Amino acid sequence: MRQPELAARDVALLSLLARGCVLRLDQVQVVYGTQRYHYKRLAVLEERGYVLRRGRYVQIGKKGLAALGLNSRPLDVRRDWQREYRARVADVYFALGNWDFQFALEYKRRAEIRGNARFDAVISRGGVSYALYLLNKSVRRATLSALRRDWASLRGWKLDGVVVLCPSPETLRAVETLPCDGVPSLLALPYPFGVGILNSLDRVEAEVERLFPGFRPCARPFADLEKGGVFVTVLVTNDLVKRRLLQDYLTHVRAGEGKKNVVVCLESQELRFRQVLPGVEFVSLPDALVQGNEPLLVSISRS
Image 1: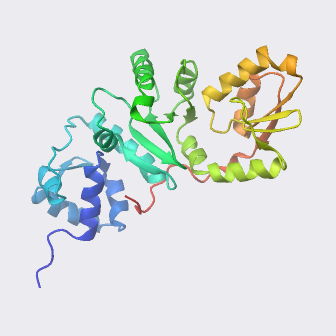
Image 2: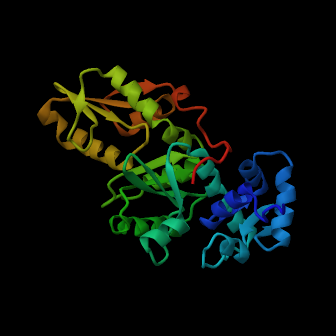
Image 3: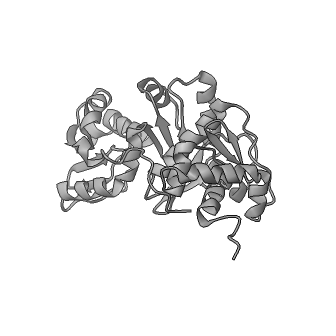
């Protein structure tokens, strides 16, 4: 009996590429789960027009889209730096194991977003969706301005917040200076360490519950928990909106209320937060709580 032209792993590869990404050869290997077999299949798929090979990068071809029943055009990605950028976003996709992940192209199609929206993906968890941005090691002023324009449209895109992954301390500092008016939540995280934080939120939440028994959820926007005269603010995700609300409370309100403020963060975050949040008590969680969950290519197991 004649074998089908496309095997199951071929379809898995095409389906992932059709969602709006470009893959490197090492990422294709993950899809196939073998050491060498993916080279053979890529040669066949390229010869038959299902995929396009550009050096170490792979994109879907027009025939590949048609094989999936999609009447759309392939990505117009012409330069290697553009391909590498999309592949870096795919690195985040492979790494975020407990988040729903939509590449920018597929989310824009579903939400019918037109115009030059700059986000790279939308990630969702527990009914909350974030626009995700993966920045470069150096960031231009024009890029920061574009981010602010994007964030002004956030509610219209039915998104609840923003995650910005910053590959360098300089980029992280630049993001931390941006206004976040109108943004419900803005998580500014170092990359790749920040992906480990995102993957470990359940573990962080469980540890906070263990450390603060009897505390209840707090309705004040600068705190997560409260009990008696104590407010607890969890800043492991470096939510800039929450940070600034806490700073405003410390500056203008706390003296009149006579409350105590406790900030929960990671050991590696404490020094920085002490500089911007004076006069609060700190409880530091070990970095080991989130380490081991940084971006590593893992077997593809979700749509």
